[in-house]
Image (spheres, rainbow, N blue to C red):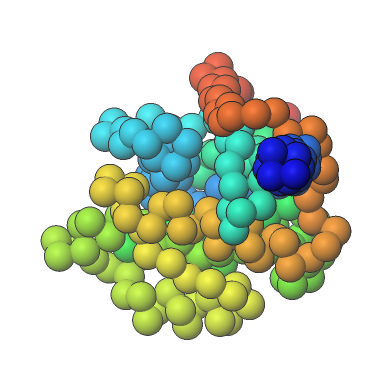
Length: 224
């Protein structure tokens, strides 16, 4: 009886674990903000645990990460968008397909805070949606430079977020990895509040993170 009981218990545990890994929810995330605020550094730090010192303007970078947040499996499709105006048309397509947004500013660049208003308005206009329909988190990056050249205070960022209807503000450092994971996790929790967000897909065992970088230069459209 004891052997049978142990066997049944083991089977039950295995079945439960298999069931929990059977599917995961996919979220499409766009990381947006002015150029040189650390969007790529944040994303690469989150995906690969690496800090990139060199500034390399992004054209189109996409990433895939399988993870568990609050013990729920999910697949994150992350697009690191260009902050340059000449790639606005390309950026529009990402904004339409994304289900959630990290809006990133640099605490060392006041213009990057002003740009958040423009990106926020752009997201809502492109999607023809209300602010509550698009999960967002405001990220104040480069906090490791706080003592040297800070131009944006956390209080100012909170006022801006309240004005725009963004529920969360978080300070990060892509260099030290401070609050990097927490920023993405906050966003997923916001996305989960809307039952329509996310799509279920089969869950493969283990972690399968990948990065796709398209470094070809796209010519800006010229109207004659």
